Length: 329
Image 1: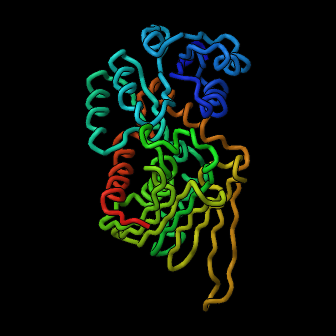
Image 2: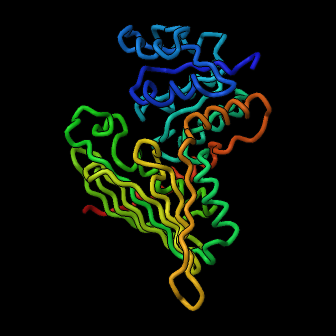
């Protein structure tokens, strides 16, 4: 492409180094053009896969770079709103890591800044760009499960040994719900198009952060249960259960790391007899790369972005309700 969308990254975060940086570099119509970090050692890994990248020694210097079209923000959670607002004020399009905010009300600032600056701003909720999730929504919408009755989500890993990790620190907006709860919640909302009417929850706290959360909710058409934890054996799964079928996603959130992206559609035979299991696999799809390409396409072609701030606000609204109503485990 003659004029690729030029991306800059605020900070040399591990996630940006291992996932989003390479995805931006590999994406069609995108160029990883700049990085903001004062550490040459942290910049070096980015320069190995993007050798022409410009390294700015501060975040403000990158925002002042007139050649940058999009700023990607993988900073600790408590800094997301501040730097997203600064980037939009500088006229940059913004992709900010999830959770974009720590409370729903902060989305008012992001949406107002987006409208005022006339830019594209979104939360980096990559799973909606993955074909397994687009297919899951299609199957539910077209009635492959019959009447949807129940949705369940599970996502866990164990980082108790990494005591300095920002996910284990309350002052940086850490905790399991903000880090991975967004997945089990947002995925259900994306597939069904519904919002919860009732929410209850139980949370186990450790040093001021939630390390295990058990959630129950009622949506207009189905019941919902989920748990997330940063103190359990790594596992992830989403299940959509209807009266005529069950849809199971075995690596729903970070396929190719946890396992192969795969949909299992279980449907019964006549008279309740054992039926068939239809399996669809998506081994090559990279949802980070697809996210970058969708973001660039929305900028160049003025087409709607698949995951606008308004969608992400709904996920944060449910997170707020969980925190507000939860009892201690």
